[in-house]
Image (cartoon, rainbow, N blue to C red; front, side, top):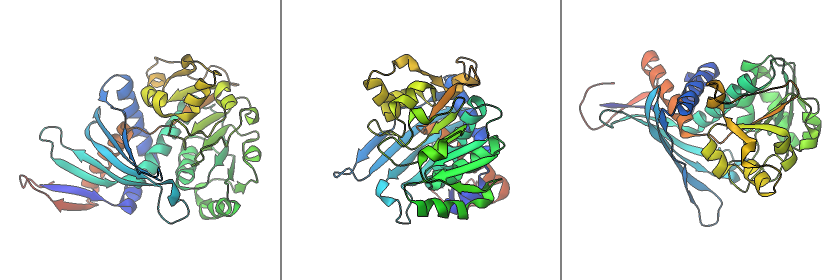
Length: 334
């Protein structure tokens, strides 16, 4: 028996954004149809709370996948050369439970998170949206630029970061990903002024996006805050928005943007309108008016990782790429 191994470079090379968006669409549709098993992630914190190890298992009915992601989250890695999220995604056989693949989780997380935001943009943003503001200048800003350029015709791209040097480096290094020049802005408010696509991709624990900045008709992909006490959006931004997420249970338990606005009494539980899969299957209504502000609260769920891993496994077999490791069990090849 052989097991596929893909490192970070190989995952990026094998995984087109368009294909990943399609895989995430399939996974979130399966979730909406109750064709999946998705327990809440479990986390083990280091004693000083400087980082954690997260375990995200799941089962996906279509495409049939069974496995888990194990990932460390180390916010202090920013600026050190190490990604903040590192780990592996493991895929197992459904009949015998044998390991099928061990895949780099850093690259999978970077691409599938942006792919989910791309899907949210496809189904929630206005068709004519194309003025993009990126708050943050790290890995997720890069993959979100790719995703936004894939799903909408961009006419303007602005980036803002707590470090102007980092924002300038982003604009220089990733100019080839944008159909228009990337403008570096001095403040988040300047970046989002008149923007109709906004992606927050920071590690901030405090709001970087204020509700009174938001123009009518904007769509927001809120990506960075995935803990109950962290938020990238202030209460007014959440209150003004039609709120959607990838998984309702995850949002209710883990999303500080939602939970803190709820705790302050600015919204009720009904403000969380539903999941992306429910919009796609017609269970929940999406954008109603061109002036609606829509908000996708991204938590990142194991089903997205499983669908992406399933796709990578299939692509590696068809192209002959990756490293195939000898494993125990029957010697039945790939």
